[in-house]
Image (cartoon, rainbow, N blue to C red; front, side, top):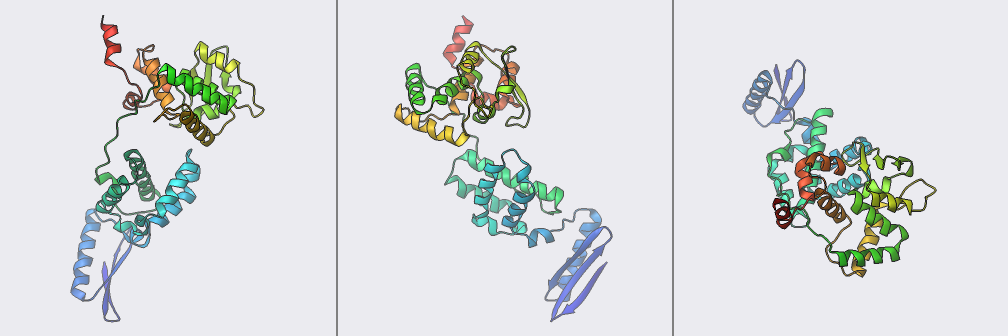
Length: 324
C-alpha cells in the first residue's frame, strides 16, 4: 500500500509491502509521486523490484573499506589484495555511489586503466570489483546487478615465451651464486619442479619425503594441497642445501627473491626475463617427458588445462621429430 505526505511543498511517497522494507521517494507534484508508487508496487508484485536504497547511500570506496575489514583478512593473498584495493579506493571511481556504478562507468574505468597498466592487471582489478559486488549482493543486501558481468573484458594476452639458452642460463646462475648462496639452488630447483615462487618460499623440510621423492605443499595458489614429484637432480639439489633453523628449505621472502633475481639478470645482461619464466621453461621441458596432459597438470597444479596451455610452449620442429 502506498501513502503520500506533503512536506515543505513536496510530496513524499512511501510504498509498504509485506516482506519488503519501506521504499520512499520525494517529488515536486503529487501525480508524479503516485505514478512512481504504482510502478514500484507492480514491480514488487511481479518479483522484479530491486531495492537500491543501500546502493544509493553507499560509496564504492566505503564498500571496499568494508570488504577489506570483513573479507580480505580471510583470503590467502590478503597482503597483495589489501594493497591493490586501497589503491583502487583512491581512484575517482571510489567516489561513485553503488547505484552509479553502471556498466558504462565500469567500461570507462577499464579503458582508462588500460592506458596505464597491462591487460592482465586490468582483468584482475575487474575481478576484484566483481567479487566485492557479488559478496555485497549475497551478504549485505546490495540491490544492484553486477555491472562487471555486462562489459567486455580485455583480451587475454598470449603467455610469455621467453626461454633462456644454455649460455644465458649459465651466466644467470653464476650471477645468482655471487649475490646469494641460496639463489642458484632455488633457480635450479624451480627448473626441475616447475613450482611457483610462493610454493618454493613456503616449502618446509618436514614436508620433503626423500624416500618417496615427493615434496608436499599443504596450500597452493588455487587453495588446494599438492604433492610434487622430485627428479633425481631435484633431490641432489636439496641434499646440498644447509638446513635452516626455521625449517624452510629456501629461507628467503618473495619480494627479496624478485629484487635479487632482477639484479642478477641485469648483471648477466639478460633482458625481459622474470623468475616466473622459470616455470614456463620447466613445464615446456617436462611436457616432452610427460606426454599425458593430466599428469602434467597434476605436477604443475593447474586446475584448468587452458591455463596450462599458456605455460607450455611446444615447438613445431619438436613435433616433427616425434612424427618420424
